[in-house]
Image (cartoon, rainbow, N blue to C red; front, top):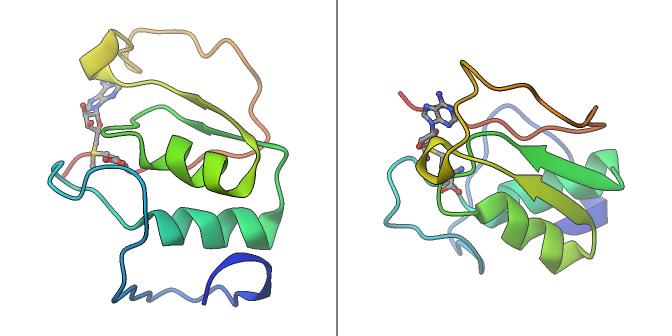
Length: 96
Ligand SMILES: C[S@@+](CC[C@H](N)C(=O)[O-])C[C@H]1O[C@@H](n2cnc3c(N)ncnc32)[C@H](O)[C@@H]1O
């Protein structure tokens, strides 16, 4: 299940992880989840303010849409930073 024909459910499983991001990064998810969300909601751009290893960017590139990604590890602290753009669509995978 991937791309435009997906049905969104509250439980997902991707036995084949797909390409993009780093599955050794703590808390990383399959890029296929993000690709399915893009395929379902069809945003023109996706933003991620806790991007970790960059899975959101990879998913956006796989589907040919724009992305803006940020993280504490590259100097963006969401607790103390303004969000410059007014995003249409955000993928947010906070630390736990
Ligand atoms: C669960 S990981 C995200 C994993 C990511 N989806 C990926 O593709 O690898 C959570 C991320 O939140 C970032 N983070 C934690 N506190 C933050 C803060 N105050 N501002 C921005 N990013 C923060 C961490 O650096 C970490 O990369």
